[in-house]
Image (cartoon, rainbow, N blue to C red; front, side):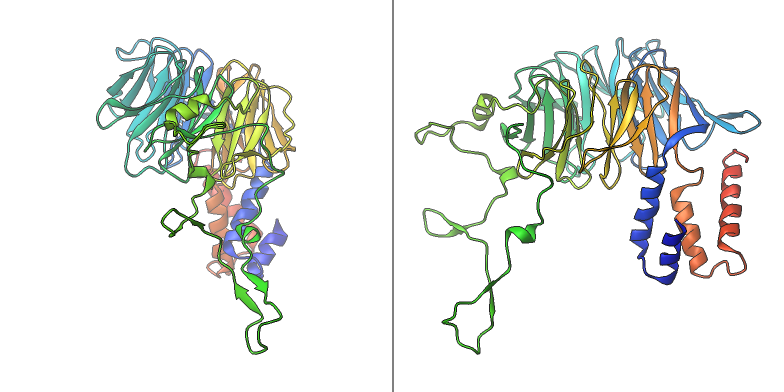
Length: 475
């Protein structure tokens, strides 16, 4: 670590690389915290959780007893053990006793992406509710035709307020908060849909995983899915850089004169249309085939085409989906106890062999990735396993639960990994007591000469101890 600090001091290491190194070191030292506990307000298994995307402060959890609770993960409610252990109790709870509460298990609970004043819950009572956080009242509700397995909203959407819902029905429905009505019905799956995930690079692309083993991509601006992943279609490893596909320079023929340049630029080939004009190449991710195999020129409706495609991504139900931050890759978990990494552009299975032994086959799972998508956290029965995304090797195994873990969430702002299972206390995994941004800011201030009279180690120790005491934890 101090070698990295020295490289930053001498200018060998740019600021952004220094921050990435610090983050990597912290992730590699994750462990169960002995100084922070979140006291669960639930009496059943916790099925879903999410830390808000605005402040990274409020944890939303939904449980099988029909309750929904919000916790402040930064400000402790009380302290025990001579101030050594910070207890975080719920600051808001809605359960069956609430007149608008869910009657059965809450399977999904998500924040409204741009405001903590709203959150969305889905339940086995066949309803999706939009709640006002301040009044704990339902402002919009939707009745679905079956149990709700998962709900999702796009974090990059700027022109719609749609909630994607996966239920035991074969159709995926999009609920519009603004109008309070269903705007889309996506048909193609042959069984219930347990996983829904929006693309992180396009507000119009939705990914769904069904109990039929299929993973389908939808562009909600048009009918039918445009891609179905096939586990038999594969490529080795991650996709090569774009420059390797299209070389920009080639050697010139000998017939060229000596005064001419030795290299010429080459453009990507363009297909000619019927009228002879060049047409731009459309990426394979957004192409919809116009004909099925064996057809004789008759165009099929895209919806019919997608329903005829029987390709599967897993041998069992697809129980979890997670798109990487750059939107280029998709991670999927299935009831066949397989974790797969997909190249979204090519639609290929990258054949990364993850060291997964067993995954809960009966429930929808919530996966989590680090901010740079280098690690994926997967609930594996009573443990959480962190896998290297590109090699599949097990990086860490987190233990502490007595029963199966259903969901996990990685808080990139405080760099904490939250994991929840069927226990009364919700454990929080921390690597350091100080905030990452504080550490980086302290080092940069010291290197800039803002604290010339202090030794670096001594100054950092004083600042970190002061920060911990301010938060209510003493050494």
